[in-house]
Image (cartoon, rainbow, N blue to C red; front, top):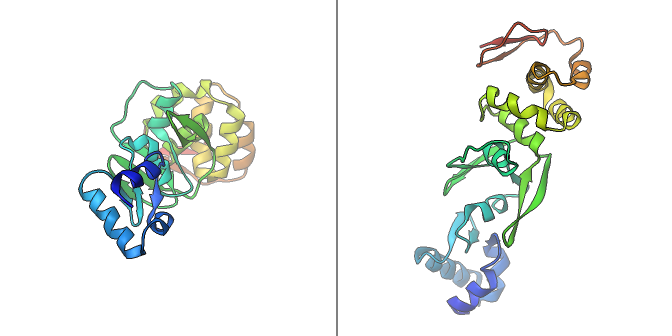
Length: 215
């Protein structure tokens, strides 16, 4: 197996593992050495232990390092035209915390609310509009005043259902932000009914019935 033949086989894959390609070689040890040489020469990138890509665009491979994973927060909001901000780092949600080549992978137990989208010749995974907003709340990635302006453009029922899946604290915050925009919050109100706990947050809030206070 020479370099040209190998790169022709893996060149369009978003990522691949040593275990997937070593049958092309005489041994797994030689395959590992071969890949290391291509990484050193700049033909491949090593994304994580035993995971590689021949692609140069991190958007094309960022959701193919770990599975499941998906792009969220500013990047997803920009993809949907909800913001003109162009973030320097690609934010990805997955089961593992990791950072590489301008990609920040945030460990999250809430791996739902994403879909497969076409990106040039690749397929990547992207949060829905509602999940991108919710992830931004949960992990404090976007100022809440910016998120408030986006809420009327979202599916309110879906946003409520997603927030309920993320627990009462996050549901309260979403409910408060939706309420400020005059949106229906009946599902969230029912979910937190009877809960007397307070949620403390680090952004200014008006007097409210959501039991939310400044930190």
